[in-house]
Image (cartoon, rainbow over all chains, first blue to last red; front, side):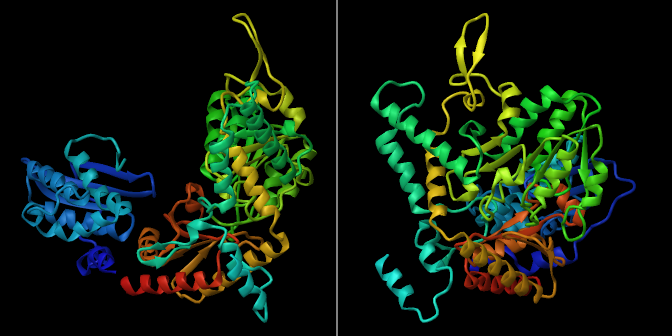
Length: 150
Length: 420
């Protein structure tokens, strides 16, 4: 059960129970929707970008504990970061979730988000954790299209 | 095997259905998952296969493999004979009147698409209406939506009540002179509801409207007699009834099949081809273009043979008992809500737990060795009807046991603890 404990850590359960930045944003200047066609989970990410910096970020949606916690932690982590830094983080988180990071310096690259690294042992759940990240990536690129995990 | 039968002989109060003995026939059930014995409750997605089906596939490929309906050589004759014998066995299994009414397809989905494209495109036009129910699988919604776009017809939906039963008064109201086709499930994959199929067919036939029944979830649980049901089309898959994947059946009444054009063109479905004109083959071959899944058909016949050796009354009683036991056990877990509480149900227990998503339930149960389905079950409108994003679904087969349900219940208590 060690792997299960890695997946459902206290911090993750806490973010699931009380997600941070879980609200719509009236003055958002970027917005994207993400959708996982396999399970029907969906998320909306709102951004307020000012001079290339993520001034404010929030999300709403429905999904499992992993997807909700991942989205919540993502918003906490991205607030105040530059769009460039956010995209770099997206790539590193993605590598961690899919197991491509091989555990090397993961904590250096993703900071607190390393707590989500247990997900890579549950292939069926990787998309739950990456949905919000695909969505924010799509919002940063400014496209109106719906991001999917496929 | 001997030891097992000896054991069951010596039991003082033998169970009416010897599930221990039956489980021996399914090799996939004898494995551990995450160090725990596998509890396979995802039969609604696909069932496990008895050794006799696996052997039939191996035997075909080892000794009979050849293409059918074209070779003059010995092997081809043997393969053709085995394949056509399988067709006849399937005819008997659903009590169709003739082998001409049994069309091999890839599965239920292809069967419904065949009817929508061949019958639908020929006989439906702008303004016509097609009736489905609110608890259809996507495979009994989307082919009709595609047809509606092609011919300008309109899809009408029979509502279901809070127990997940078809509202028959609403169905009666929906039928009118514009209704040109009715297509409903026989047993709901997401809710387990057994639909009053015979009554649905009879009401449509009063207005001369043809009816297709989606039997994918019915054939593993119910004795199906297409003549008694009176339906015009009946579709089902091999893999959900202990047969191979990639093979399924469309039953169609001969009179309708005769006037329908081919669904696909190719080899085997023709009698004469010139560049000026092609003459189509007779039924059922008119609808079977290309080399079919020969091994699959033979494997499906082996599954029917296997089912034929079971006492169906015992099987039904055992499955009924399992469902009642599981329903009661889940009702005792306070935050659990069962979705689909129809009076007539088969094999499916769908549920949600307050504030805990089905995916999380599924992952934790998996760690206990319990395989369930978590998600929308390819029936998103059903999820919308009940206002839930997803459910956890335990779907049973006759080889499941009460002890396995106990394992799932313990797993659910673990879920509650993790999210406590």
